[in-house]
Image 1 (spheres, chains in turn yellow, orange):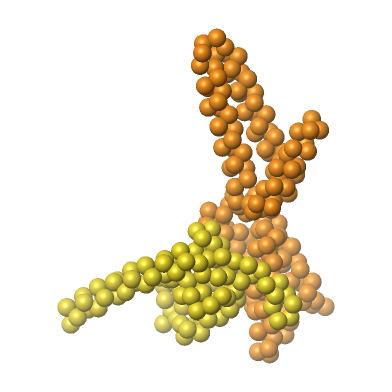
Image 2 (cartoon, rainbow over the protein chains, first blue to last red):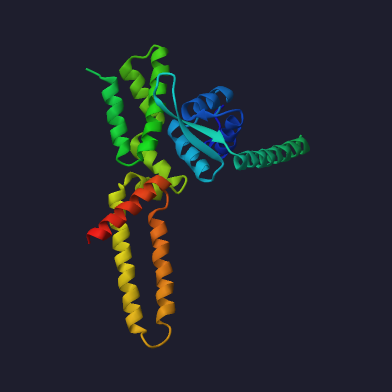
Length: 110
Length: 155
């Protein structure tokens, strides 16, 4: 099952923030992690990730810095900031309340 | 013959026409990482490049995505402009505001409100100055200021 595009787009921010909560990371690794964790249910176009990362940075939820890959290539890493962590908590609560509501409704109809 | 490095360079060059140098460096790392993964899975250079560029999207599509997201149109444009170019815009804006201020001050001379209105216009000029420097980092903003002062001194 592949998630519809609008749901994939809506979940992008909390997923990126969740990954960065576990430690600093970079674009390609974030994409790989999302693919692996979603078991292929979530299909992100690789290119959509970077504008989102830049937007999160402009909101001061994450911060970027340059580092080096193992082969010496320049690589941009991202770190979660305090405001991003607070945002993640809030978004988790929102998603949980939607999930709880859907569950209650499903229980009511069964 | 297919030259992987040349193809990646060409892709980045096309992306660089519309996106900032930093963004292109970031995208280059993504592209190269994906190609490495695909080659490790047994794909030939050409196949790996075709797959990776298809996944990341064309430079045009990426620019659209950047513009749609993060309100980055301004920063995309400003960041890809040289400080010299931005300083020309700043000079043009300043000249327009200066002419406006002088005209208003002359028109309202003797009415007692000329100074106040001119001050109001001065703040308008300051606003456009800051807008000119929006979306770029401090170092580049300083370079723009320097280029601006240099040009004014040469006028």
